[in-house]
Amino acid sequence: MTLLLHLADFNERRWADGFAAALPGRKVVTRADSYDPDEVEYIFIWKPKPDAFEGLHKLKAILSLGAGVDALLRNPSRPRDVPIARFMDEDLTQRMSDYVVSQVTMHQRLLTRFKRDQAKKQWRQLYPAPAWDATVGIMGLGALGLDAARHLKVFGYKLRGWSRTAKDVEGVEVFTGPEQFETFLAGTDILVNLLPLTAETQGILNYDTFSKLKRGGIDNEGPVVINAARGGHQKEADIVRALGDGTLKAASLDVFEVEPLPQESPLWEMDNVYITPHIAAASSERTGVAYFSKVIKDHESGLPLPNVIDFSRGY
Image 1 (cartoon, helix red, strand yellow):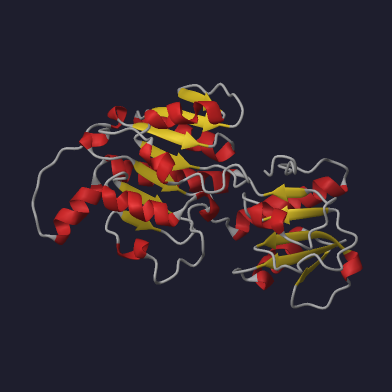
Image 2 (cartoon, helix red, strand yellow):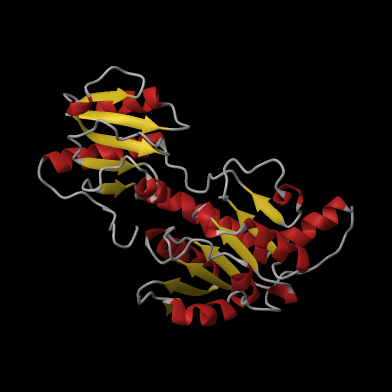
């Protein structure tokens, strides 16, 4: 068995050393190594090149370092009959919840307003409303969305969620499908996007969506959007417009249509935007190696792959 590492933006050699230690008796190679493509049974991948799968005729599984797999599904060289198992463990989930909680509480505590006052050296004592006065709407109630809701519930936020399929989540008012989307938005002060990127969700964070969010919510200011899912979910020109005309009060963006975010993007200069460089839930080397080493061992022993992508749904 050979495991091939194809990791853009990561130190493949360091990851390979970790896998080699965790998988004794198996061959672990990087793109820079010499290897026989016909011996590669597993590929561990992040941001695949267009030709990433060429010559890999004996693949048993594609192991995705990221929770999102939209780039993999679009890859022209991907063998259509090989299953994709995505990374999903407590470490990654906790990191995403950390990000969501930090951004939600920041906006609920009016830090955008205080940041502006600081820039003007202005002392204005405004007292933010408590968490239970704010309604957080989470788009996407998969593992990440459910864990974020669990963490936010501790603070006392009113929670609602929107999902493709009906779900019963304690402490969360759940809305389902396109027919309930506008109702979901109408009661939401802080919109958190954790959806998978599919043809149906592409560009869902647009001006029309923003205009249907709750008005006069947090301290009588406009609503907020937080996107930690995929850049393809948002239309950045619409975000700029909405932030400029007051349709949105503020935004926290960890992902972008083009990454890195181009220097000429007006988002860089807006004082009501919080930009992070796609780091909300970065996978750690330690947990990634441990997780997928176990996946490979289990699969070799005949157990099914976990967190396998449903190609018909796109996630």
